[in-house]
Structures are given as structure tokens and as C-alpha cells.
Length: 186
Image 1 (cartoon, helix red, strand yellow):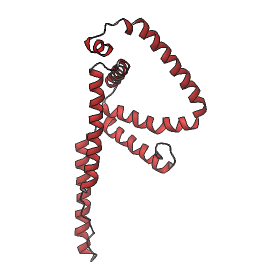
Image 2 (tube, helix red, strand yellow):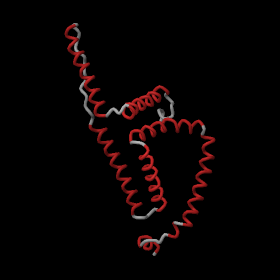
Image 3 (tube, helix red, strand yellow):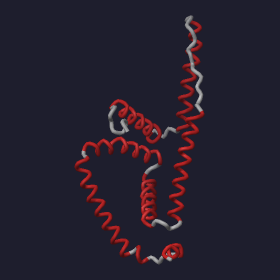
Image 4 (tube, helix red, strand yellow):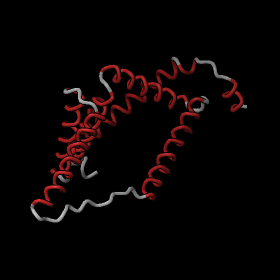
């Protein structure tokens, strides 16, 4: 949260610069991830190899290269948390597919439709970069102009609810209910 709200300006700016460099490398220069990883590993290994061998000629001790291992517990905790969130998403999707929540169904369909349109405009990396930049700008702008945004958001939500009520009365209420809905009423 501190990074997204620019509490530490150096780290926030650094994250934004790194994301921009990655986007420029992959999108504008058409560099590939596997190629970049291999080139960085080649460079790192070559420098360490040369440094290790050069220390013998200048009578210095060889560089200390620590043994790196990924601990088991954090990986298992992350996997368990990810599994929990995926299962929760599956449960929500199942409820929607069973026809239990029309409003949620329509909002998910609308969200997926908007994402598909945005996906046709740009590739995943560009979309990810746009989201990253928005995450670095919107919270800070909201915090700065919260007193002006909140009344506008309340008016917008009131208007959306009003339009949904009209849509519900004119369209959704005229859709015949399936057997699942009739069993609930009995």
C-alpha cells in the first residue's frame, strides 16, 4: 500500500521505472522473456566466472557466493492461499452458473465482455502495464481528491441503480423463470 500510495517516492518511482523498462523491452523492442532471462544468466555467470578466476592472479580470496534455496513453508503457504482463492472463485462461478444471482451474472458477463474488448486492443503485457500504471496513479489521486470523488461516485452509483431498476422492470422481469426458481418459490 505504501508503494501504491507513493509514501516512499524512491521505491514507487523505481517500481514504475522497472515496469516501464520491462514493457519497452518486451513490447516496443519485441524482446522475449526467455531470451532476456538467458542473456542475464549468461552475463551473470560470465562475470562471476571471470571474477573468480581473476582473484587467483591478483592474490585475493575468491568471492563468497551464497547457497540459495527456496524455503518450503512460504511456498506451501502461498500455494494454500492461492488454492483457497481459486476454490472460492469456482464456488462463485458455480453459483452464477446455477442461476442463483442474476445481478452477479450480468456483472460478470459485462466485466468479461469489457475485458475481451480491451484484449482485442492490446496484448496481455500492455494490459498488465496499463493496470500497473493505474494502480500507481489512481489510489494517490483518490487520496488527494477524496472529498471531490466521493460525492461524484455516490451520484454515479445512484444513477446506475436507477438505470438497473428500469432495465429490470422492462427486460429482466419479463424473462420466464426456470424450474430452479419455481422450486424456491414453492
